[in-house]
Amino acid sequence: RHTCDKLCPLCKCYCSKEYGHEGECRVKHGKIVVSDDEVGIFETEIVDNKVVRRQPEDIRWQDWRCDQICSKLGRSSGRGHLHRVSCSRNHSRQEGRQHDSTNNVDFLRHDLYWLHHNIIDPYADQEGLRGNLLGCGVPCTSQTHTNAPPYCTGLLGHT
Picture 1 (cartoon, helix red, strand yellow):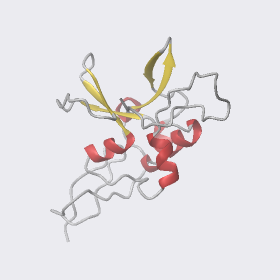
Picture 2 (cartoon, rainbow, N blue to C red; picture 1 turned 90 degrees about the vertical axis):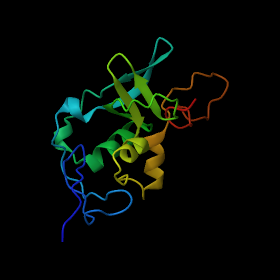
Picture 3 (cartoon, rainbow, N blue to C red; picture 1 turned 135 degrees about the vertical axis):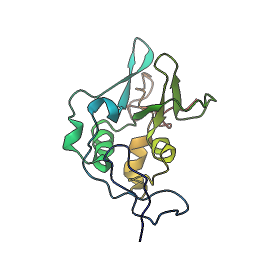
């Protein structure tokens, strides 16, 4: 039996489905093997009333499995994150996709990253956690309510 030759971009583990299968690839993920720069995961924050992207500085990516790192970010911050990929040349406005023409890259919301690579989202069956992974993350600055969540409850990258 021959299996699909598709690799996870983070751990380089192969798809476990048969070669030539239909639909998304299923990967049993392992430890991240690519460099910190290649991981390309960014959190968002507000600086001077602008949304900026930054890489978490306190994480050594290679200590984690790629199907664990996104949940670490989601649980610690309670909001979503972006994955950097090479520019797809698809510059149409798509919710959850941000184009950076200066560096010729795109930033994708968590769910779109796995879709971009045609791999089943490792968190697809964890609905509660998945909500954290897709959350906007922009802090609410309104003083008119006190019981609201501290962050926007929309999807990351919404318009």
